[in-house]
Length: 240
Image 1 (cartoon, helix red, strand yellow):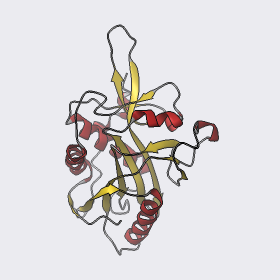
Image 2 (image 1 turned 45 degrees about the horizontal axis):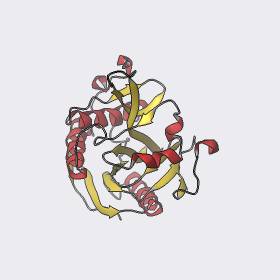
Image 3 (image 1 turned 135 degrees about the vertical axis):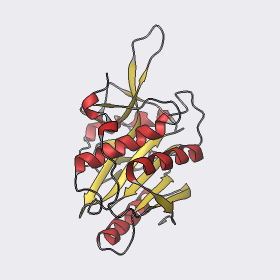
Image 4 (image 1 turned 90 degrees about the horizontal axis):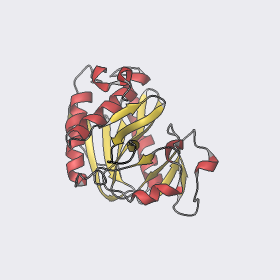
């Protein structure tokens, strides 16, 4: 059952005190992971120094695995399958690839709230709000990072699958990295790793759940939910 102590509806909106809008950028095509990390780090540094505004950057990566700071070597089951990149974000191994909407979140917590717990809760609330627009009940589980859905099939015990991952890093109270929402990725690609160290649970996507959602539709749901949780956005250019 959902741990109500983690219910994101109880989290206060994580808006800026000055009400300024965050940039909202969407990259067409695939963006290479090293180029994305370089651009994120540069933008986060510029935000911390007051040379640039906040940015939420939506993109797709070509198929690849990333290892967060808590990744265990044994959780990489097929190291030859796709390129593997070490990442400074929190978390363990995850997969990125076509049909998955990655949203890199470069927000200035100095101008919002210097509270890591509330920030992560707000990221969870953002994803859950977006899923709700497709009548999907995203849930949280104590001790498991990310957003989950409960699958009920007649004749089988219920199971829980992960639909969105969260992995962030803060530097000078500016965030980077972010979230990954499974819209329509090839779920078989997750079999080369133990996703986020979870061996007892699977992964799913909006399409796998029976919701034929496009990336553009997912983007609009993410944008609307972000505004509810974090405040206004405005169109911006992608950094790559």
